[in-house]
Length: 81
Image (tube, rainbow, N blue to C red; front, side):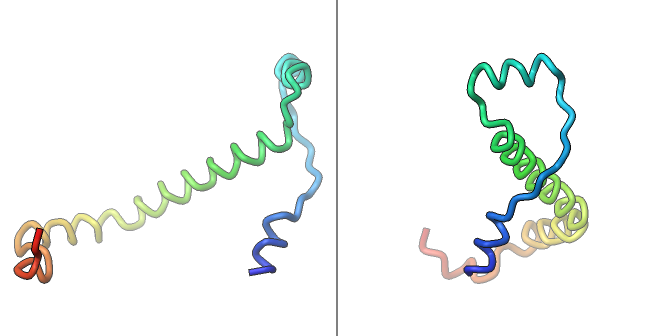
């Protein structure tokens, strides 16, 4: 677990090109540009991974749903709700 925390806290310098007016406004408002960009990129990565997973597993999910519709849920007869 310590390694995962170390990896998550590792930062690297990078060059980033932003519109001058956006950068100026962000600085005036005291917005931490690195933090905002990092957070936004993390969310974008999460969304893209989710999109790709869904695209890769669409056939299986459709087949599974069709099976459930035709035969019902496993152990359904023992449900109490």
